[in-house]
Image (cartoon, rainbow, N blue to C red; front, side):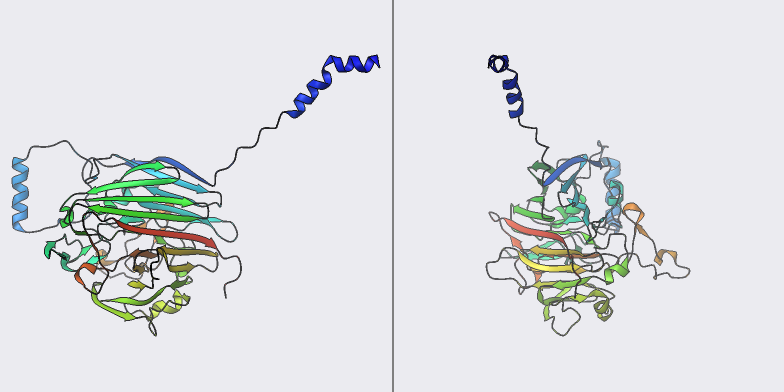
Amino acid sequence: MADSEDEKASGDVGSEQKLAEVPEPEAPKIPDVELIVDGFGFMPKSPVTTSKSRSGSVFSKSSQKVQEETVPEETPKSPCSSSSNIDIVRRYTWKTKNRMTVQVITYGATITSVQVPDRKGVSDDVVAGFETLQEYFQPRNPYFGATIGRYANIIRDGTIVVRPSGRMYMLSTNKGHDHYNGGYVGFDKVNWRSYVNGNKVIMSHVSDRFHEGYPGTVMAQVTFEVTCDNTIKIDMRCTTSEPTIINLSNSPYFNLAGHHAGCETVYDHIFTINADKYTVADDDGTVTGQKKVVGGTAYDFRVPRVLKAMIPKIPLGGYNVNFCITQGTEQDLTFQARALHPLSGRVLEVYSNQPGMQFYTGNSLPDPDKIVEGKPRYGYVPLMGKSGAYYKKHGLFCLMPQNYPDAVNHKNFPNSVLNPGEVYVHKIQYKFGILLGRYV
């Protein structure tokens, strides 16, 4: 008995109990979504020239000479128009627990990379883009992944009449006689201000009055968010100082087999588009104001269609058409389109609150078959992208939610005028998934 009491008095057993009660440290919890910030490059000191001179008249040339003689040299400034000359182009990277990786840069508020796994768990980049910032400056960049504004798509003859005032404005004509995707220096060619709020990246830009001919000073804000269910959420908002037109969008070029996989894999895609009508366009691609029913035509994607069977029916060599989305009453986000690549099992669904969606199959990308003897300038000039990939005709597709093209000049199209005190809101969701079974 005494021995047992001595053992208890020694305190050895009590110390063992105290040690046993100490909880083991828990392993660090992996976040559902991780956001990383780094730099992508610097804006050049001299303005980026992305096109030819806007005017070739004698008067413009003479005025340039006068300016060269009279205006003293100023210190070089960043070509970031209206966004307070931000020199650093930042890159934001989201990584989800479901092995999706998304990258966005502040130049043009551009989506540069979207890596998602296939049914075998192998990840690949499904969005076209370039390796360096300098490549995004090149004139041949077809708006890869960029935010488009102030007005996405074409405005005929670069002329708008803003109602109810009835004032006429002449916009820059950067595509023949027409205005296209915001002009020479649209929202895709400026470096946006940015900051982080949780897992969201918020970018802002101020477009000055009469920039590219548009009336009113516009404050634009674009919010990017990636969720753990492999969804990219984009929220675009604008306010204006006077009546103007607004139609923002984003234009990522996809190939669900991989951005490098080429046209044969795009032909294997199965598309579904929630639209009963489409807007008719002439040979130049400008809308006529007429809407036609898709039933019985090559534009009927209300049921899933394999692109390989549909694209030969299009006389213009591919799709470049605005679909009139079927929307419900008082509906916020509407299902617009679905794309499926059967071999990899990757699925993309597009949702938006806008009435239209541009379906484009990369018709204007370099065509290896378009080689003219003795005229090298009209031949095939390759366009190299990320990882040494060559982007070719029909090797990529674009599903771009938007208002109708040239809507301001057609009374039967949805309203595109934004007035002071109003807030323009455009929401887009790109949802990625995997089809595990066999598609029938």
